[in-house]
Image (cartoon, rainbow, N blue to C red; front, top):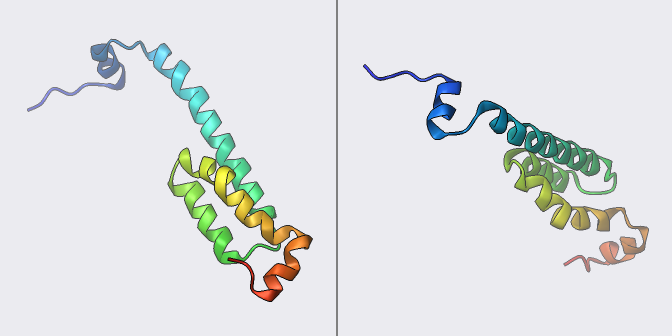
Length: 98
């Protein structure tokens, strides 16, 4: 038989007060949720981007937690943006997309 600890007791053992823990976790969670929602909206608004690329970036944003949306904004947004740029249509039609 082990000793069962509640949430508050566990953090008490670590020397962290519950209010301090929540003061850190709640803002970080809100930032993460905001990044995820903005990334999803941005991905879905790319109308000319191929569906498979959009699905890939949606999976990255969902399943790689906080880093996924950051990766999308750093890498994926530029990648999907080239499909929405009318100046690049001729390049894509020629096959010079690599």
